[in-house]
Length: 116
Image 1 (cartoon, rainbow, N blue to C red):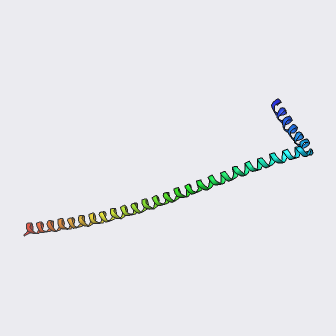
Image 2 (cartoon, rainbow, N blue to C red):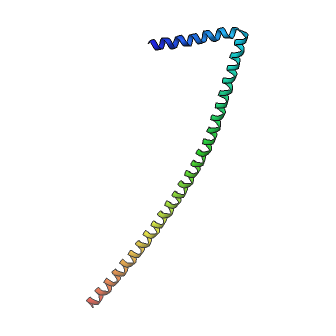
Image 3 (cartoon, rainbow, N blue to C red):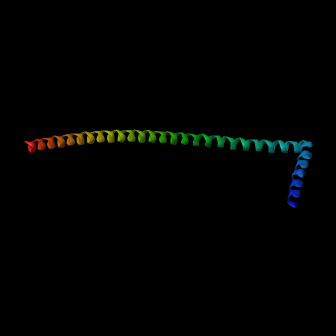
């Protein structure tokens, strides 16, 4: 609580001192100079911030583009793999059906020889 009182006393004292300085022409000039320097400083900080923001924005856009390209390539590869698996499975089913038909034909032929 004591620290808060000292802080408030300092803030109020600063405002009173600035008000009294502002009444004097030389003090007014000093405060105007301080204000101009603070404004220049904040403008420089703002410009640097906007420059960094633009730089990071460019990097983020490049990363997004790279991620989209990688996603597209992965999607195309996955689609190609699915098509290959489908074709291989269709070929395997056809070969199995042919082999089964051949086995059935062979069994029928053997059965007919046995009955003859």
